[in-house]
Image (cartoon, rainbow, N blue to C red; front, side, top):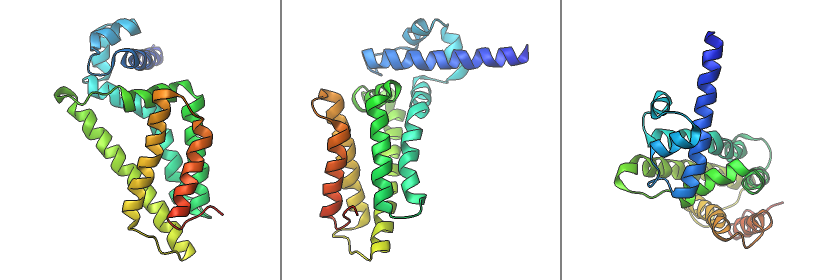
Length: 205
């Protein structure tokens, strides 16, 4: 009985997260109420509060289901043996491939990038986004610094500055693709990243 109860609770939590994805994508995060998510999930508001303390907590849990694997792809490039640039390119391709081909990943990234209104009652989400950007830039900085040291190359600007530019390039391309779907992200993103890497003295080999 206890195992069944635990499984039921996990199923309810998953249903709430799935419903949150759908409703956030349709209405935006600020305009969505927990009551609307509960209705879409077929549960009570009490069931939501059993698993999540508020909407920001629910949003964070929804993001973690999908974005942590993407972040992990880039983190692998820091830890992997071999050429850091080659590792970065390979893991970026994997991450972008997930955004293009995996519906859940694409929905959650679209919500995070296009459907979050940074109003007062969602201040925690803005803080979370800022922290995620800082972590992403730091990962890129480590990759670029490691690649420069391995190759004996002199970077044209501080690694932190170049990492911020790389982060802006990648997520800018993803943002544009989500808005218009007017170009082949899987083809153009690696090409743009390769051009950026060549420009800072770390060409793919």
